[in-house]
Image 1 (cartoon, rainbow, N blue to C red):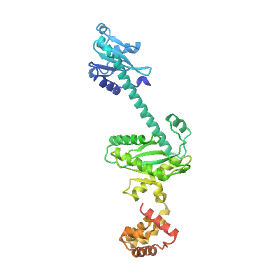
Image 2: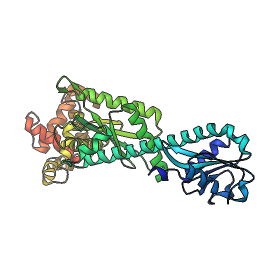
Image 3: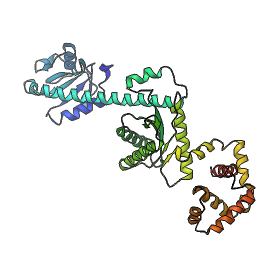
Image 4: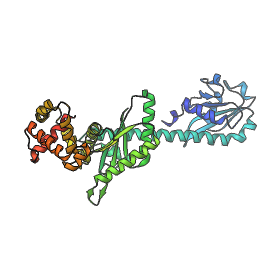
Length: 384
């Protein structure tokens, strides 16, 4: 409730601001008349009867020399009701001659109430951010969304019908303690939210932030390259303003219920695979490495064992790893002999010899599409 909003921390902040503009002792009392903030620390915790009168009468109460004989825990001065909206949330006490202090009462009241209102707005903003985060976490963790989510989303101004795609920011951490890491994460989260107010952003863990971005369409067609460009733009902007080191993974777009949860899973997988295959890069798009990402799910199954068996004889013979390196380069350069030869600094005839040797050892015909795919899949799984 509003009556309980004014606490000791906020009271101390008000006192600190007021003592810089008015030369007198300042006390802040709660709705029970108890001093919760004061420029005289010895008075904190005591009941102020002048404040109780101000609360009961809902007006400024002067405490003059005559009043000191009937009121307990007071000194000469004035007591000003402190409001938030139309509700009295506390009292400001100024020590000194009432006639002198009254000329500052309006200024003091306005400054104090502005501080309370600002703190209240920051608290509401913090609550709003937490509610949005909880909504995002609920979305990415469930392929079947709860029926109450629309009721939850509407007051937050979130359109659940908007098509979105997931990005995952993976923080390279380990250097900071938990409190420092959380502070840095919150700062990074704020930077992300400032880039686009329509993004839904949530901290998943101390090393992960998820972003649900509106999908970019050209007409009715989704544009993955434009989505990737925007990811790179975001990465560049964040690197300029945050000391943290991080990678970003862009998932795939899925339409319909549960689409954002699946998009989140592909973004996570894209990050895992991307960091392994392209360790020098910091941003990865599912559409750039979709086959390795799709094959990742086979890693622990019997299918992976079967596929990796294709390389068994090749690896047993290729002690220096020359043939495996050649095969990697050949696939990396889309089977183009000239580009592969130049990348390996070998003659085209040497490349032809190595490819024939690979064919002999694996029993696969590199001229056949199926055999090429088996070999490529085996390489991908062998590296995971």
